[in-house]
Image 1 (spheres, rainbow, N blue to C red):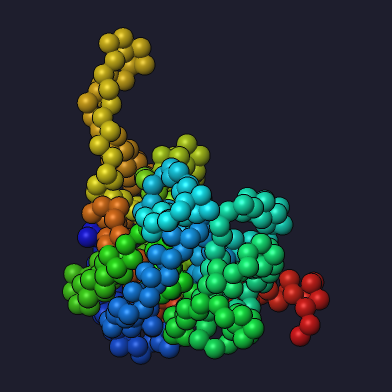
Image 2 (cartoon, protein in one colour):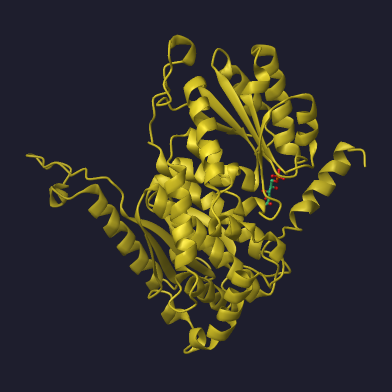
Length: 437
Ligand code: PA5
């Protein structure tokens, strides 16, 4: 389902360095498997794959089916790990251009085959966005899924207040249209639920936000968008099992090479995709690696780029700017696009040399050419290839990166599961806002 190619990064490593790192890599891997490393109380993202809860998947599918039947729009309110995974998977696995369903109000017996629009809110504090969103929702059948593990994060809490008040003023059954996804007992959302019987999904305490895409945090919005969550989930389960042995383990190779380059003063890893539907994976990957590695003055800065688009902007820097970059390419072997370039009698655009080729073949050459150029320009490159843009390989990729980042954290000797740095801005902001202590 997933293949890692490291041959264009290995020449950048000091001779024998990867072999010499093997004992430390195995040790870091064992800490992940046996839960003996820092932050091991947050390894629930593995537990939920090792012991799948099919009843929960069924429950999520049933809730999603109801929302698909009754809603025109599902607004998911959350920030960071409480929205990036869902957005990444939905953008990857749903059509680029989707006609909104016939409004539920105009359909006598709406079927569960309808796919409501899934919108996101609460991941910034733009009042203009909230105002436009409320205007956009007028006249539509709306459901809200508010997702916050702590239940105290300001950005989603504020958006939820606006949207909840609008929903309550608009629908008699507002409480039935709100689903909360939060901690089992604590936080403001559980307080609210004492007064309102909202449907609730729990975020396991031992799963941190950026590792929560395969909990109800990600699975409910993803299911509402029409994605087969069982294939996604079990793709991750399969990958979790495949990565148990330390030998020939691509997650260890990926973590090890990144670590060695970090030791050689490389500072930035860019996740590059050649298929726009994978763009949002970059946002999820950035959070996963940024929050897990970036502490105590260590870690590669994770940036995401979208090619060919960014080859015509950031590509100049990647090729020719300061030499502190490595690149992770995320590709799909089969993008499902068999569109062939048509021939032209006049050939006025000079493109007949491409006649008959598929766009996929041409895009592949763009990747190969870019990789060659960047490697020659001094950029170590690793490539992760998924078999196809489908739920199971994507689930495998999610787990692959989660495992790799956990190993990476232990190599760097940091706790990969905390994010103390996220608190600093909140402290300053709350002080300026006069939040009561
Ligand atoms: O990775 C994390 O834990 C964080 O980035 C959180 O996902 C983010 O801060 C949102 O937190 P919460 O779900 O508590 O609102």
